[in-house]
Image (cartoon, rainbow, N blue to C red; front, side, top):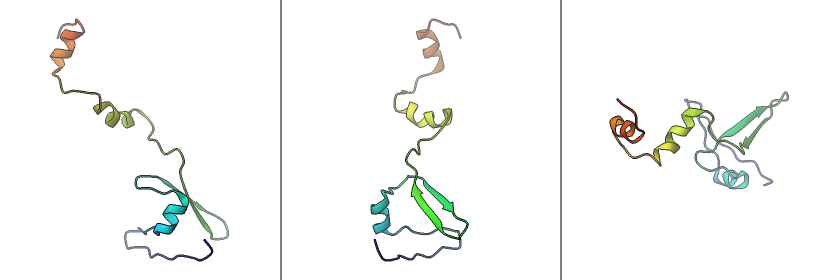
Length: 83
């Protein structure tokens, strides 16, 4: 892309990424962007390649895909314990 594209920053500090730029850098909804500000005032924006969530909290949504709602007593009985 040889020409410059321009967007405005809202009062909340938000801006839109032009569709042409999104397509060129592979930016899709939900992806993270890395902002690098250089000493000469230039800002480089790139798509984060590995933007998977970290930690146990990230597993909560994933675990829900396997879990069926069951009372705790049912799990305890199945595991042979006492409640």
